[in-house]
Length: 380
Image 1 (cartoon, rainbow, N blue to C red):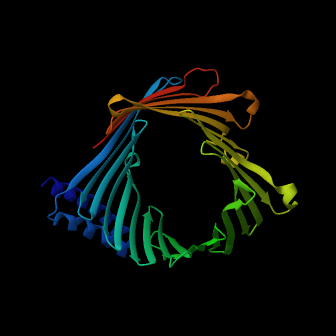
Image 2: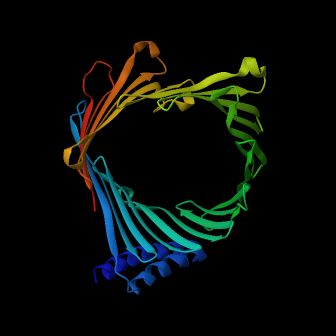
Image 3: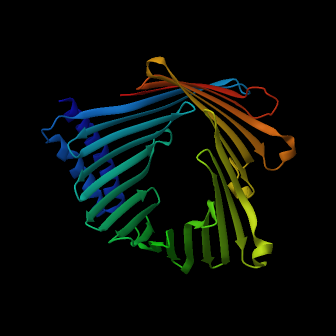
């Protein structure tokens, strides 16, 4: 009986949305799928399995002296090869998200539909429906997405008869109640070449050619077994781009990754520049991860060009667990100012299904605490 009632609630909500879409788009065919998917599980006789998770965070901003409540709740109901889920979120005391999803996976055929709302704005966000079919080496997927202003139709196919894998995708779009027109498409082929992963991709859009990309991954030199290279050559309407990403692995504890990028025009030596440097290693039980980003477009939060993270875990008696993490940030605009932000996270797991954490954040660089958050998560 409880499962039947929950299914009726799902059906009622989706039925209301179906009526909305019918009025807006005169009953677009994809809108017919969801009510059928929702009613069918209520007729099943298998026992239902209910699971979920809830997360609550209380955040205090010391600058404005305001306390915010953040929360996220998810519930999933499984019945045979059917699954129905609900997810809702609360951000800074605002109910900003509500989503319903239902899927069915029966061997070679998978059907799913998800609808999202923005309760704080009292409006519908989007509705996505997917149908996927697999037969041996061939996979075909159709996806339709309806937003407040547009609708998208995506057709995808993948064929993997052996080492060669071929994938293609085409997207159509339109404004609401207008005919669908071509938006973009791409085709990709992946295959091994001399023990390297190789990929070739061609993209086109409504204006014609967009880009062609050639990738080589895990290129290892015989005399330098500790060095591997990823190489990407891309041709766009604006020119050529060469990316080289060397990775140095020193044993199982240390790894250094670089990303070099060159644009057409100045020659390889003059144009090749470092865009990213990543370094991680393990010292005792502490994981150290450092990243430097030279391209301002890649900066963290559009502000920080470098970060250093120290992470440690400890197993306590009675299967309890403690995790700590410290992250330091340096601004890209003024690196000489030193550390301008620091974050501390401590997470405690007394049981497998419950955890609690403390997060502290300071952005001034003076050591004054800017915000503090207490959170807890329960899964069931």
